[in-house]
Amino acid sequence: MDHGQLNIPLAKRGNIDAQIDAYKIEQAHARKVTAKERAARVSNLKASIKGILAALPDDRVLALAAPLGKKKASTARVALYQAAGADLARWQDALMRDLAATMNRCCSVSPCARLEGPCCDMAGRCAKCRARYPGCNCSPEEWMGY
Image (cartoon, rainbow, N blue to C red; front, side):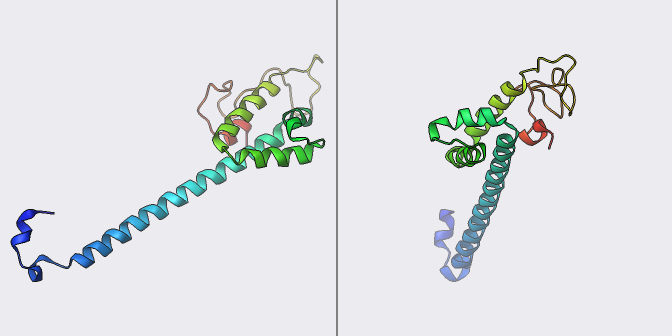
């Protein structure tokens, strides 16, 4: 506030209540935008974690969920997804590293007998830019080819 305005009579200063109301509306709008961005980010992380858990082989999911006492892959995936809710970004990074390590295991059959194509040449690489994890800045969805 300009101290020179203190010498001006209240009737000529303007409507301070209108200025306060406009400021409150501006702040509420900024909070709303921030909340929407945060909700979208959390939604994307949750979808990414679901995709990563679906891409992991059953034996690896069971090994990860062994401390949780899960014996079926479907319940293990649900339990791991629920556990990931505590820190989504950290879980996403850890599961991506685990997925990359799992995908780097090549089959012992030569030539490769996989129906979806050879595993040796693209295993553990980004589906978009073909870089090895964590060598690219692609999103997890792009990395997995969604």
